[in-house]
Structures are given as C-alpha cells and as structure tokens.
Amino acid sequence: MNLKNFYNTDNYRYLLDYINLKNGLIRYQKTFLNKKQFKEFINQPHKGIPLILPLGLNTFDYQKAHSFFKIDKKDLLKIYQTKNINYKPIKQYFNTDKVYCVNARPKKNLSKIINNVKKHNLDVKKKINNLKKKYSLIAFQTRNIPHLGHEQILKTAIKRYGKLIINPIIGPKKSGDINFTYLNKIYKYIIKKKYKNKIEFLPIYSSFFYAGPREAVHHANLRYQFGIKNFIIGRDHAGSNKNYDPFDSINFAKKLKNKINVNFFYSYGAYYCTKCRNYVLKQCNLHKKTYLKDISGTNFRKKILKKKIFLHADKDLQNYIKKINSKNLFLK
Image 1 (cartoon, one colour):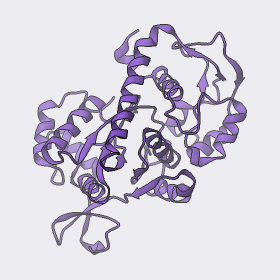
Image 2 (image 1 turned 120 degrees about the horizontal axis):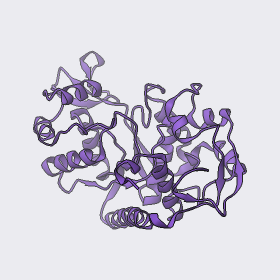
Image 3 (image 1 turned 90 degrees about the vertical axis):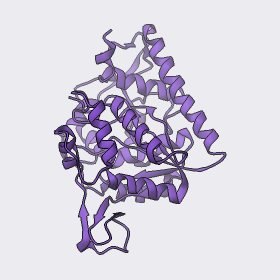
Image 4 (image 1 turned 135 degrees about the vertical axis):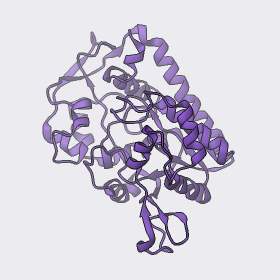
C-alpha cells in the first residue's frame, strides 16, 4: 500500500470514520448507519453529518456486511443544504450510484494505522480533560494560514474564555487547502512567538465534508465529544467554492444552539480599521463601517505563492513560511 497517496483518499476517510465511531468520538452515532437510521438522521440537523459506509473499499472486509442500500439525491441536497447537485464535495463522500452497508470491518493489515489514529485522538481527549481542570476552553477549527484578522479572532476568544484549543482536522482535504504538515509548523511557530500558555495546538483525526452549515454543527459535536463545549463558528465555516453564503453556518448554528448544548462564539470576520489602525471584529460596533477594510485571504495566498509580503499578516511568520515553503504547501 502506497501510504503517501493513501492518506488523502476516500479509503482513509471512511477508515477515520470507523475509528472515531468505535472510540465514542461521534456524538450521535456508534456505528455506520443503515438506511432507516440514515433517513431519520438527515431530518435531525443538530446531529451533524450522517456517517455511512459504501461497498468496494479495499480497506474493508465485507464478508459479514448486510443491510445494503442506496441513497436519494434529495437526501444529499438536504445534508448539504444546497440545490447544486454538482457541488463537488457531495460526490466525493456521498454518491447516489454507490451501495452502502453496515457491519463491515477494516482489514487486519491496517491495525497499525488504526491504533495510531486511536491513540492520537484519545491522547488529545485526555489532554483536553486535564486542561479543563485549570481553564475554560474554546475550540477553533481552521484550515487557513492565519493573517492578522484571524489573529484578532484568536485574541478575542482567549480574552473571553481563557484558553484556546486550536485543533484542525487531519484527514483527506480538497485541492487548494494547505498541507497539514505546513499548517502544523506555521501554527506552532506563531504560538511560540506570540501566544505561549494561551493556546494549545491539538489537531484531531477526522473526516472533512465541506458541507457548510451542517458540518459546522458536526464540528461542534465532535469537539463536544473531546470535552469542549465552547466552539467558534466562522464565516463560510466548512464551505467551498462559494457554494454557501458567508453567514449561513452562523445562522444555522444559532437555530440549533439549544438542542446541542454548545456555546458558540460567532465570528463574522475581522477587518482593518483605517482610522484607529487596528484589527477589529466585524461585530464590534465601536468602529464605523466606512473605516473598515476587508482582509482578503485569497490575496494573502497569492502573496505567499509569489513569496511577497502581505500587509495584513505577521511579517516574521511570512518570512518563516518562505524558509519552509515547498511546492507542496497547498494540496494539488
């Protein structure tokens, strides 16, 4: 098995789901769902993303599999809350042409990978439970290199809660997302430089679906299982290719807040105030809109790729990125 390629495939994605289900890290599921359970699940949006297992993966043994079923297009659109059936992430994880089942098991030759993922995630859960004895914690999901607007969100969360847990998801991602190896280095660098004892970087293994609003709630449920009941919902949380409006996830989470018992910190984005020359959150009413300048993550990425300095990001961090940068900084 070519592990280098394996770690960004659907085979690995479903294996992560299996591991997390077996270890109690998926809040409303213990095993892959059958057709009846799947139908019930999609009509309960506070539960997040329904996890189901297709036939045909070379990582699973299907000898004892049963309860075979297919899924309808309308169910996929309900999960992704979109009218766009051609939205690429839908076909990457859910597919109306595939047959799904229950009771399949991973092949024995994957035991080392399974044990490594299990140990990592349970170690993170243990660390979080230890931190809870001393601090009030809030979790932050990210897949971006932080600019100074992002940092203002981090600072505000720290001030409000005390300790920030940055735990990006490690798992198969789409083309254009930052390679986790570099995201890991970048966040560890900036935490050491600016945020000692205020931020813990604790990534977790899980699947990513790019399902926008429903996945934002799924992320909150995942952190709940790790022991964190405070979670940041950001602008275009878990979206892709402008399929969702920027605040869809925030509005969706607000409606479901009481059902899932999670405290949300809603981040509508951060801006540069040209009058006070500082970085501020959009929801702050102390700064007039006429002075607020949007910070473009797209422009930041372009500057990184051209190895030029972006005005609204830490210069030392950008120089550090230049040193570690390679052709694999962003996934292809």
